[in-house]
Length: 116
Image (cartoon, rainbow, N blue to C red; front, side, top):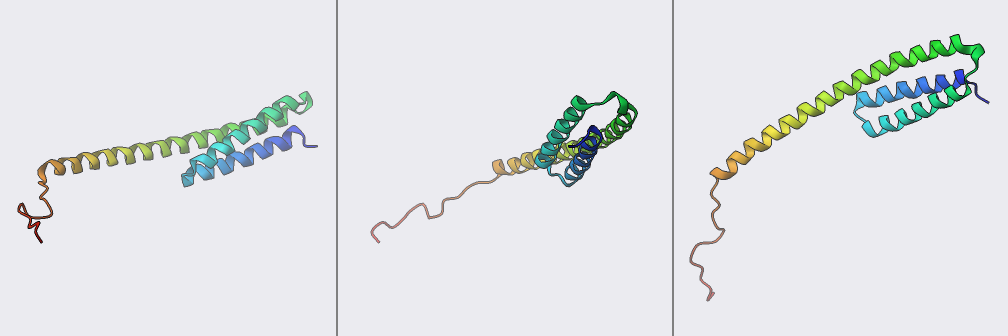
């Protein structure tokens, strides 16, 4: 049976993997790992032993630091996506401007020999 310190160690590992996935842009996998990390932290909290409070505090401080890194990486990813969307919108507007200047000519001539 795992004690709460082992569970928090697993939560730290899940957080590190989550940070790695965010850095790679794998948002769905990062979300799954975030949920796993939350579940592990809740489990450890339910099992907490008052005798191990100082050890738990140390692990929770580590998790807090890791959460700060995850948040910073998520913000960076959010800004990158925002820039990409803005760039795509500007490109779409630019290409839309060309559409009005183009005149589509029919494939065949105006007079077609139907007797053929």
